[in-house]
Length: 55
Image 1 (tube, rainbow, N blue to C red):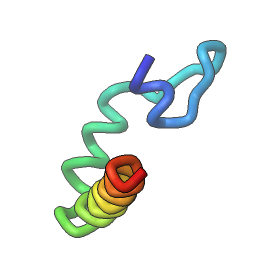
Image 2: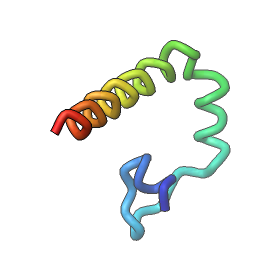
Image 3: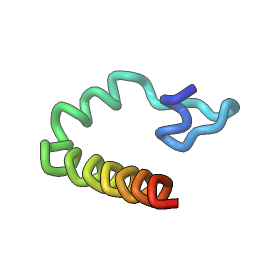
Image 4: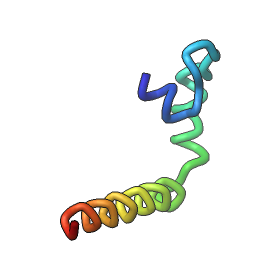
């Protein structure tokens, strides 16, 4: 379920074969391309946490 949600697929849509995703992670995504979205998520989560603790 998480895999589908992360990729933006509904339960009715066919997902890509697992080898397509792993090939892309090995050959197309570098550490920088993966780190950028992770940093944005961490910043958003930190901001949310600060807002909750300040209230």
